[in-house]
Image (cartoon, rainbow, N blue to C red; front, side, top):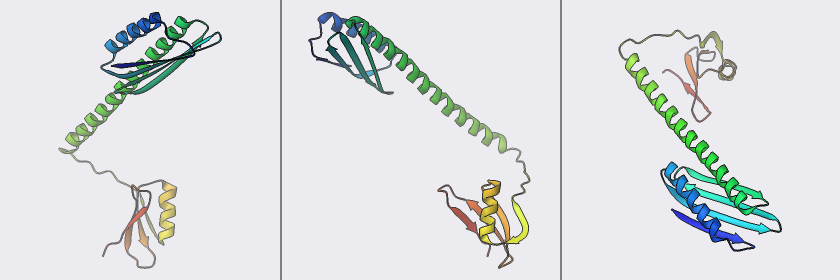
Length: 174
């Protein structure tokens, strides 16, 4: 862990440095690893402003606090930092849970679909002969991925589908 102290307008007292190091040690126990910590202390007239930037493997968290007392500013900034880190860790944990659930669900679907496959009837077709432009309008209106239609020019069945890149694909049997 690398701690960088920066003070503007006045020198940072050793009491504040010790306080910061103690709070960071307690944070390091809660987190797996801390990479960089930048502490910027600014004093202008009666205002004491503290800005904390903490970089860790989960991302970058920045907090700032401004009060009339130096130690109160540090305390408030570290309290905000702890809340933000807790929230970020919860987001990562939830993200991992969602990814795990989707993987489990997809593997269950594969396993369950293998022994007994079902056929589901779909009504995404038109018996009325139509041109390609009309078929695209039908595909858009019904908000489907695939549409089967009878081409009025050739009299053959064609399949119109929506591609992943947003364009349309057309399958003409030969």
